[in-house]
Every structure is written in structure tokens, then in C-alpha cells.
Image (cartoon, rainbow, N blue to C red; front, side, top):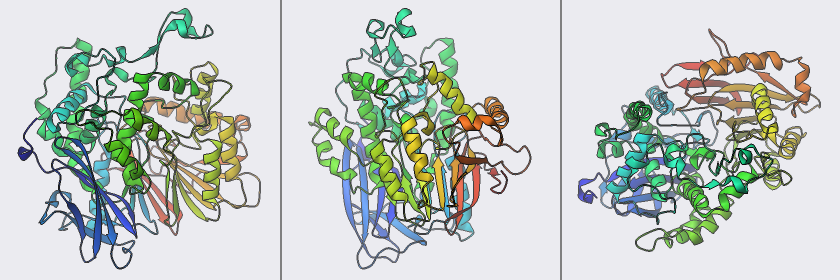
Length: 617
């Protein structure tokens, strides 16, 4: 490991996480421990500091700033600085033009929200967070605060879809910072990462064909079935230290410079993988070049997150059968738990400023025996933790859903997709919506999706292949679909509900109203995906046209959908080449007027803007 004195002090952050009038949470990573604190310009405050050592030279910090005499002001810029005992750390790289310090807003009345999902570092598309930072900088120059909030609704990292060059970078980061390791798993992986490139899926656990049902095709083909259903698992992450290193590389610009990634040579590989390696490396170099700007964005807007499947592994908890195969096998269970523990550390704690999430910290630190992580006891706590979801008491109220760990399992057929929320959580959601005129719901998967695509998914599910096309829409499970739609049809639900979703790698804008009844409520389904990912453009154009034909407003096929009592109107983009579905990588900008949707735009990675016509349907 490189000497600590030769490493920069600040590696990742600062990131402004949860910001409330009574507390503001900051997250950052350093190479040395110290008594860090946050100071505000013109405001008296005190700090609570939690530090989590993850390596010899890797310390994850959460500083929670508390007001001394009166609550922090809301809806106006607050400038801050980061201090190490008696000195101030240099944050000039995170300041917007003509500003001496980074600044953020404690949101109360939401006016502008940035929202997105699906940020795959090696996808050929550019990183839309860079464009979001450019937009935020322009707003600050115009004396506007810019976005009040940045919401990331899933797949902030891709633990199952890892590029070959990224796997080599992960190995270097583990060594560079001396990240503490867990004992090797019984997978017979080759010793060096370079020998594992594009072949890790061969070593991951499988269900032997002899142990499978004779009704399945795999039994008669004598083909073992992998526990992990990701189609891109060639470099799937395995060990805890790999997950931590991936987070550092996804959010830290300096980490790429420290490992001299540009000089990484391609190992000896077959021609197919050698070409793939070079393409992925080129994409990662572009991703790394933009990280300075994405770090600046995180330092200047309160950022909240929620996991989806790729933060852990593809199809995470999609069916009861998937869960049974994974959690009954010690190695598969260990890999999934590593993904969940790393999410808790790098994303989850900041969402509630540690109010509930920090209750796990004592048990986590006891899991390190001085040499390696021993997570056997901690696994029970992390799997039983029930507070990944959270709410913001803003205007409108924000309700962020955990649609991964509260699944409504199909007990008759383990191969059927599980509901995204079980009855208990759906009942809690219903209670959260009551007595509010306006609410924002963050659901990683769209509640009201594209009917033609959901019909195709239903066909695959009928054929017993729900994992092949990710049958994870809300309408795929009878019980959860009915309960949710019944909630939206109630007379005392909000008059205006915005549902922010991602996951699908294309973006769209739907408005929904119930067909019958006197309660005139409107639901907006605003889907933004992906930040750095795209659905194949030619295919999405075909599906767009197919959906317009098959599910036109007067089409009888609408009555065969579970949501036939809801009138779903699709909104086109403005300008030339109007379309309903947009595949180009983007992050969305939601503008509100007194809590009502006023404008819905996509900020693309090339800084172009696409606006949806909210009046056209």
C-alpha cells in the first residue's frame, strides 16, 4: 500500500445528504482519521461525527450538523466549509463560479427537483450528472438556487454488470487504500483479477440440473441453472471489499488518477474480449473525466437515494424461487449481503441522517476481528432491517419506497413474480397519502408502465421465464396491483400525486385519472432512465409505435389490463420528432408551482433539453 502521507486527504465528497431544518447530514471519505466538522457561513451549529474505518487508509465519515439556537433556514442557500481540527480543507474544486464555498438548500417548499436512475459507468452514453452540474452552475450564476433536491431512484452502481477494466481498477483500489477484506469464498476463483476477467460467472453457484423440476426445460437439457440471473455476470462482484472499491470509483475523481487508470494495459484475452476491454476502457475514461463535476453537484444539492436491483445484483428478490436459491446457499447469500451492507454504508445512512440506519453501526464494527470481516452475526441484522424506506416532510410530501425487501411473494408458484410491496407496506403507503393534497412518490419501477412492453413481459412470464425479461412491473402481481389501484381510487387520496420512477432505461410522461367517481385526482407518472444507460433506440421506437396502435384510447385491449378503471394519457415531447418514449440518456428536471407539476424536462448528457407537453395527450 502507498504510504498514507502520499495520499490526498479527501478522497470522496463532501456530499450533502439529508437536509432538514433540525439537522443536515454530510458524507465524505478520507485517507486519515481526524475530528472533522462542518461550519456554516453566518450560522451557529454543532456537529455529531461518526467515522467508519473500512481500510488502513480509508475512512467513511458522516457529519451531522445541528443548529444551536434556532432551526436552520429553509429554501435559501447555505454556504459551508469542512474542517479538520484547526484547519479548513480546500473545497474550491466543489464551488460554483464566483462562489467561495459550496452551498445547498434545505428544502421545504419544493420548486425544482432533479431525478434520475441507472448510472452504468461503462455504457457508451455520457454521464447526465455532468450535464445536471452544468445546469446547476448556470442557475447559480443567474442568482437562482437551482435544484432543491436530487433524487436517485436506483442502480447508482452496477455490482453485477462490471466492466473488465473496472474489475482491474477495483483490485488496485483495494490495494491502494488497504481496504479490509473478508475471508475468501469457496468459489475456486483464480488468484489474480486479470485471470478472472469475463469468466467469473463460470465460478458462481449453480443449481444442478438433477435437483431441478422435471417440468423445466433445463432438466431435460441437463443444464445447471445459475443462482444469479444477470445476463452480464462475467465480472460480477463477490467480496465485500470489491463492493466498497466500486463505490469509491463511482463517486471519486481522484481515485482514478491515483491508480493511473489511463495506463492500464489489456491482459492477454481472446479477440472478442480484447475488443470489449478496449471499448469499456474508453467509456470509463470518459466517465472518470466527468467525476469532478458530478462531485461538485453532490456537494451543492441535498442528494437522497434508493436501491434497485443492480445496486446488489440483477433480479434481486424478483421471485420467491430466486430468493430460495440465493438465500439457501452460503456463498450466494454472502454475495447478496455484501451488496446490501455496502449500500447501507455508502447510500443508506445518508437518507435518514442515521436516525435508524446508524443503529446497525455498533454490530458492524464488531464484525471486524482486526484482520478480516466476519459478517455471520451481522448478516442477520442487515437482512431483518426494515427501514430502508423514508419520507420527507416537505411541501409536497416525499415518500420514497423500498420495493426490494418487502416483496409480496406468490406462495402458490415460486416462479411467479413477487409483488413489489407486501400488504403491510401497501397499507402504510396508503396511510402516508391520506390527508395530503399533494404528494411525491419515488418508486424505482414505474407504477404505470408502457402497456405493450408489460404485455410482452406477461407472455414471457406465462412461458415460465419471468427472469429473462425482468417482469418487475407493479401490475405483474394481482394482489399488490389491486391494493395500489384501490388506494389511488379512494376519495381521500391526494388531488395531485407525482410518481418518480426509473429502472427501464427510457423516459416518458403519463398522466392518470380514474374513469369513474367524483374525486378529481390526477396522478403523474414521470419516468427518467437512465443517467448513463439507454434502451436500444430502434427497438424503443418500434415499441412506442406498437403501444400507440394496440393501446389507443378506444382500443378494447385496454379493458384486459388491470388498470382499466384508470384513464392513462400519454404525453408527447415538444418540437420536431415528437415521441412518447425517449431513450437518450438523461436526468429529469421537475418544476412545481405550488406543489403542482408545471414542467417536466429531460436534461440530456449533451446538455440538450427535451420537454414533455403536459397539455397534449
